[in-house]
Structures are given as C-alpha cells and as structure tokens.
Image (cartoon, rainbow, N blue to C red; front, side, top):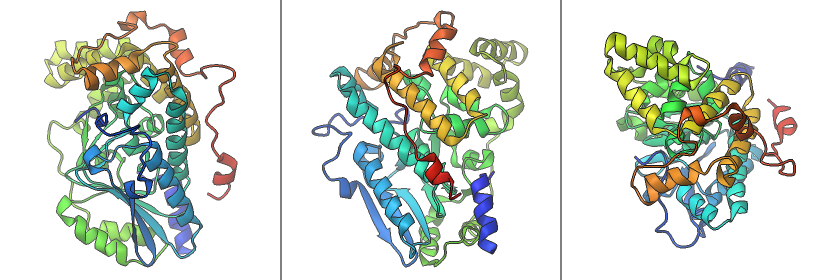
Length: 403
C-alpha cells in the first residue's frame, strides 16, 4: 500500500510500557533536554543524511527538544540540493516508543499546560512536515515503534520493518486517544483493522506491519547493516532507486496462524459496527458461537480501556476516513488539549497515574462505563477547548502546493 505522494514521485523519477517511557528519574523537565544536539545524531553521506534518535535509555521517547531538532534538520536537508534523500532510525531496542507522558502528567499536575501545548504543537507540526516532505524518506522501524514513533515515520515515503519491530497505538489504555496522525493512517487500513488496533491497543509484529501496509518493506534484523551500507552508498534522489535497493533485501513474510491478519473477516464483522456497544455485543456473540479465545482476549482489552477513550477513538478514526493528514492532525490537537485540560474528564492523568506512576493498574475512569458516555461528551472532546483557543496552525497551502 503506497501513498498517492509516493506514486507521484515514482512516476516523476522516470522523467512495554504502553508505548511510552517513564522519564521521571531525569533531572529537570524531560520534555526539554539541555543537550539538544545529542538527542538526534546525524550520519552524513555523499547524497543522503540519516537522523539517529539518541535516547536509548528512554526508548528514544519524544520530547520538545527532539522534535524541534528533527524539524530543523529536515528543513535544512530539504533545502539542500546536494542531499537526495533522508533516513531515520533509533539507537538501542526502539525506533521510538512514543511521547514522554510522565513528564506531561507532571506538568498537568503543576498546572503548566502551556508546555504541554507546545509539545503537541511542535510534534504534530513535524509529523505534517514529514507527510509533505519533498524528498524521499526511509524510516528504519527496528524495535519498539508506538504512538508518536509511528507519527514520525509512517507519514514518510518508505518504512522498513524487521522481525524485531513491535507496533501499537495503545492510547485508550491510559485514558488518551490514538494521536500523532493515527486517525489518518489507521482509518486507511484494510477493512476495520484500524478500529481494532485503535480501540484495543494490541500490538503488531514487523511482518504484520508490512502485511497490512503500514510498512512498505520487511527484512530480517540481521540484514540491517548491509541495507544501511548500501543505502549510504547511493547517490540519488529517485524514489524508485531507493525502492529497488530495499526490495533487494526483502524477506518473505510468514504470519503465525494466530495473527490478526488471518482474522480480518472476524475483525470486519465485529468492528464494522457504528458504536462501541455494538462492537462489544458482536464480540460476545462470536464467543457464544465459537468460544474463540481471540474474541475473549479482545473483549478483555476493551474492558481495560477508558470508556470515553473508546468512543472518542472510534469517532476519530471514522472521521479520519474522509479527511486529509493535516485535518486529522488539527482534530487530534484539539483532542489532546481536551485530554490535558480535563474539561470533560481527567482520564488521561488517571491512566498515567495508575499505569506508570503508582502502578496499581486500577484506574478509576470517569465516566466509569460506556452507558455514562454521552454523545455530547464525544462531540465536545473533538472540539476546541474554547472559542479563544487557536487551532493547530499548519502551512498547508505552502507545503502542498509543491506536491
């Protein structure tokens, strides 16, 4: 599954912890790192540049300094006519495990919402920039790739998954919502797979990631040194040359029989309904008819998630089917501000407390059940927090005029 942008460029060439990382042991505010130049390293080749996320002890979790440096680097590389393409990877056992939600929690607790807003604004702004990038981009998704990690890779042109890739959008399990462009790319997956992933937070392997189209290529981890060496030797700005190089190392995909990819008919039958209540009822009916352990496990995941988050996630993904990436990011920015301000619910803070701070794993969701989540609540969650609060500003006309 390639994006429309990829096809256009190809044609022109011929002419474990819920996706986030606990960083509270770091001094100061982890959202802002004093050593900004060190958290994204640069590997320069004759015709390319590689951004290396360099917070391995934190699973390369995103903070303001990291997304600001990435944006600055990518802008300079895009403007440099001597650079043909750009790549990204992460050090250690993760590409990027997401955003630093513990420091967000601490900021919310102190009433410092402006820095929280700045983080979401800068992160989503970079994700849009990557989605409209004018040069080919290769993201090497080796290891944990969750939440914001997907947001800084999937909008680009090529994604290389490996047998060590672990992908998920686990936000409903901490009282949040699939963000970082998730409502866009999840909504474009086959059938209702996106709804399943977004609501349950279940993981995909690298092979599954490539099978459903979230990754363009799949190779074994042991091949990465050779793949990176050959990419570094290329002198090109042509997407088809990069694609051919990646294709040369493609490995066959062998999915386990328990893979959700083999259950797409059941996924479509259960998750294609209009409401979360109907989805749950459909899964229960499947259990009665088949005693399927997968359906039981899926129901348990839905019971674990915040009821408001489930309904918000479903509506967000459904709206994403009819929206562009920038429209999804603007909506998700509104949703993220709703989550951190707590005007409707404090589920986000409660979820982080229960899962990552106190670790009692017993969040007290509010509203406590699906029947207490009104349609007005969901609509408000997808709306600006106030008439005075500006929306996320993206340079849509400026960027997309060149695509």
